[in-house]
Image (cartoon, rainbow, N blue to C red):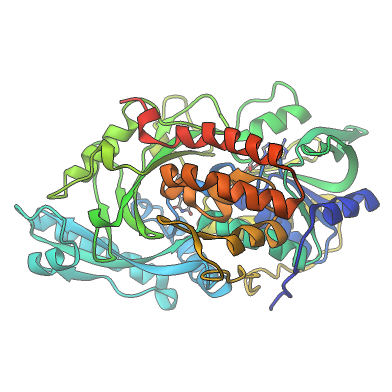
Length: 506
Ligand SMILES: Cc1cc2nc3c(=O)[nH]c(=O)nc-3n(C[C@H](O)[C@H](O)[C@H](O)COP(=O)(O)OP(=O)(O)OC[C@H]3O[C@@H](n4cnc5c(N)ncnc54)[C@H](O)[C@@H]3O)c2cc1C
């Protein structure tokens, strides 16, 4: 099934729809992978659906992932066969339903002990087997010379060979915008910069929400047959609006990524370090002309909107990368540093977060608030299907089948090369900025330079340099004056500084 491109989307028109329609079947709180997946699922089944996001779409965890659509080689090693199988099927579905946003990526695991080669080779063959007819390509063993040919920067001393396998890669923030546009195309309403400020109750049951336009300040009171809490690591805060004092459902864990130049991993293949000192895996992945290194897994009690690396996280990544490279990047080579918070489901006290379940959990509170926590980007569609099935029953809505397994998403509009680049190190031009505003809900400089274009994540210094020109184009497109553009640059300057390595603890 295909959706028609919804065309230009003005905030004024979206807010006018919210004003005109205060009654909804489904209200989704949170515009990350999980909430957007739920909104698209509900809207495409024909329910009257609104999604409200406090900041920008994917401002939370959903723009800070490793950008893999994957079954999770690591989860297979942990024996989580069901999770891997389901994710591999979703990987295939997503590559078919969002072809412009998902690409096949080859990974190579260098090995230095023959028994690792056999063990990993068998594991990756099982990974392919689990994908069955939905595979991305077969894993194969490489000898040392073949491994060095595809990974020229890998440490050659003691190299016994490697294993090559395939997985999926995507642009997380780009997919979030495609989901938001697809939801509108399916008849739903999505609004960023519209935080939910309270829940409405009627005879002890959740009956709607209050929300406030973060730009205009106007408050809205909206009723709903069912309210879905898809606020990621902020889900416990939302649950406490409903049930003050309820026990935490989530144990957030931070993951940091570093971005370095393409010269550190020439050749186009990604590299997987199969066992880090904390028993995890580390990826080095070509991404949008740069190389992404990550990630860490550090428990965090607080849930800041802009998490920053904790002491030791950056050095851990650089040290692990250096352990298998003949020439490795150092701190001065890092172009950008970003951190995200995994909304992991709480387990027994003291259990390390690396062992916590990556599977999702759906909880319904006594008042009928449906909370979805955990999971991963790759399985957002499957999670949404389960949530909406549950929500429909709970609300007594007419049952309708899920449509999203076959639903082709609205793909981004092509703008590349329409006008001259605005910066020598970033492929952003005037057309990209205007498209972000007119078609992709961008409201400010950060939306454009962090999520519509990924400049802040790819090269924070270049993003800072291009900011004044982008702000001027934005001001002209949105109808703001020079003072607005100036204030945007000041705000973005503070943010971008925090993505630069100089600002980070050793
Ligand atoms: C370091 C790291 C690497 C990862 N790598 C991968 C990967 O490679 N592949 C993969 O499949 N998965 C990966 N994941 C997991 C994946 O990114 C997450 O599971 C997913 O993004 C979570 O999405 P979410 O919508 O639940 O949360 P979020 O994206 O955080 O969205 C929640 C939203 O709710 C909003 N919100 C909060 N309060 C309110 C309110 N009161 N009103 C309105 N809105 C509100 C927030 O602003 C936020 O935008 C990774 C995660 C991390 C941290």
